[in-house]
Image (cartoon, rainbow, N blue to C red; front, side, top):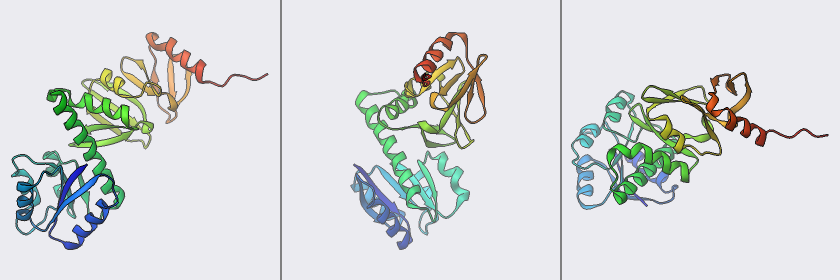
Length: 255
């Protein structure tokens, strides 16, 4: 169960958040707060996992309110002002929703929060060091969901496995090439990324590349061609296993 509060000086905005929360399973709304002072009183009395907080409020700016919390819960900013986004993500905000935001955007922010809370609770149970957070987060999401959560550009992004065409090692980083043409770069080791992706869909084909086997268009002369038009090299150490995969999955000719 996710326990949350909403902070906004606009009653209509609070009613909208309340209506959205009522549509999402296992989320409990503890309080609707019209000011930072009211929210602080609630936080002093209640255990809260996530706060949805407006930025432009009359008593205390939402950014300053979050910055002043000694042990802040997870934070989702809900605001009409895009210019605070960078500052918001510097505070490790889970998401930054621009008003008016749709239910789908709000629900996505809740799912990001849910994933991070599961990670935190698992780390507490196992006394896990901070340096291992990214590895465990990816492994856990791989086992239980159809997405992986990636920390990049001051935010957590949920990426569906099916949207990953291939992963590329770039120094100390991994760059994910996605089906919409975008790229996502994160501080991660390729070997850890390999262990975090489902083995039945992804294969390491080179020291610097992992491919989504479902996005392979063709293979010729030491190159794997993907369905987005890109190709990646395949090293000799991985050719046999890749060919075995092709033999298992390609349709057999009929007489």
